[in-house]
Image 1 (cartoon, rainbow, N blue to C red):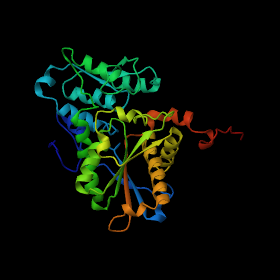
Image 2: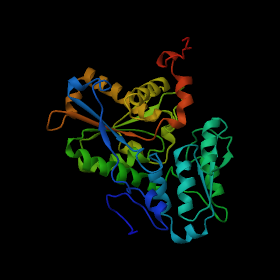
Image 3: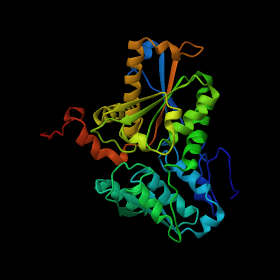
Image 4: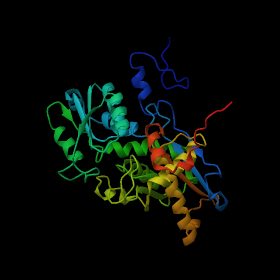
Length: 346
């Protein structure tokens, strides 16, 4: 067969077929979908809300792109001498690195996690071949501190044959947000976009994407969501922990709104039942957008964010799908959201 590269057939063949498939951009731009009135509570106010479905990439999650970027930016000498990658993460970053690192010639991925990581997440990481190491430091450590998993990963990364990419300060993290979120969004929505929203986890996406979008239009409003203290949502950080990050998100973000777990899972569920199979951090962003627009209407500032068509156009990011978190929906949301089982008596 004739080898197909960079065409619309989406046939990947040859010895590097899987590597070519996993390369960011191999499937083209990820879709952007406008939300209907059933979940857009502000359509009558001239507000349009779009979600960029970043789970439509080969590994099904947004972190696969910064993972690829960070690996690609390793120098040849370091890459050839590295047999063990180590990273502090229990989620999509180490899931992606466990797969992608093999295509860069690194056979082992060690994920440093904390004891509170649920068993189903551990099994998922083991499924993709990650080696789990338990840290008893704080769950969301200061990335510059000398205690906790981030520091422990840095120390292990100094061993011969080991390397720590450190997603919390690695420029590949932010460059992926610029290249595969912002540049695509600008191509897809262009000058119509007036507000961009994202969660704050490592801050790579919101900083990288937000910086690029503001370079195209300085008036684009950048809104970030953090986790409200007392709640737990996979991926993002608690509102007080975002101040401990290494990426200077505060230079680009105009507003941060904390969101509780019930709101995040409930809004995610609403999207799932429309056919958008997104995870709780996506619902978290929708809840944040709703809260933000309510405040803008109350403060009479919403009109500041209208484009030339007199519309407020908002885009936010779907980071992954709901499948790794299914048990959490049933433990966090009230029973009224789910139909009870019925016994047949025919």
